[in-house]
Image (tube, rainbow over the protein chains, first blue to last red):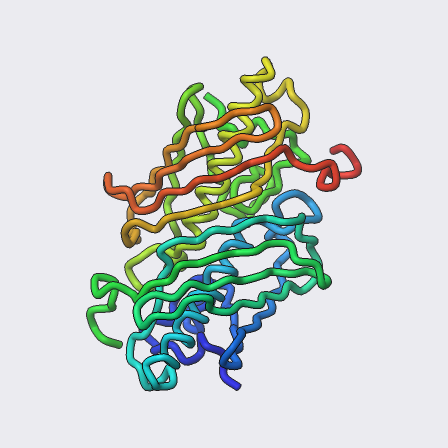
Length: 157
Length: 157
């Protein structure tokens, strides 16, 4: 099963959070079963907020990339193709809203689970829960919209 | 003029976004004049979303650290001391809400301006605008709360 992000076109795969072509980034991988997507991520020791606890900006970043991936997958299903068959069906974030529910411990793998709660061809709303050791530590809601033409790489990859 | 983050106690200065003691992090510096705080940040080439545009997760991270810094400074003023005189008056994020208004161009320094819109000793609400080349690209609203005792480093620094 391919990760959603591994099906993005090459020229749109440089995202610091999830692009397979960004060797300096997090390269988050989200696996979608048609209803829900799951991703796992192990923070590096320097990704801390306070010693012992994960940096909230990283948590927001992971939720963001997981959600825009889900938006691509869910909207692709609505328009009737798989992601590879729908060129540039790549979503960007219009709004990111994260509630930090509990301090997120360092040193354990984080799990993200998310699903779309509203799906249109050009706008998808996604909810994501980030957990550590089975406890929900953050909950995010992302409004994702199709990437505007102004952001499309000029050379077409 | 010292940055807010340079007045955090040493043991609370490891934040990936703004800790002076985290050599792998962004080390954001926010300068507070009693009303507003300003910070500047130059994204690295790998901090991209799509080629040419800054990664939204970085934008959220910068807004987050700028806002929690403002919360510390504003709440310290309310309780009557400077930040150095108020041990552990360190805020963490309860809610982070970011509207992405326009694609943020790579290759230019970003400016963050923020101010508190609600200040209590243990809870501060902050609004931050992130701009590039004079254009507002993102706007954030952060609900910051005093760091819970459960997060305080055990050894006391």
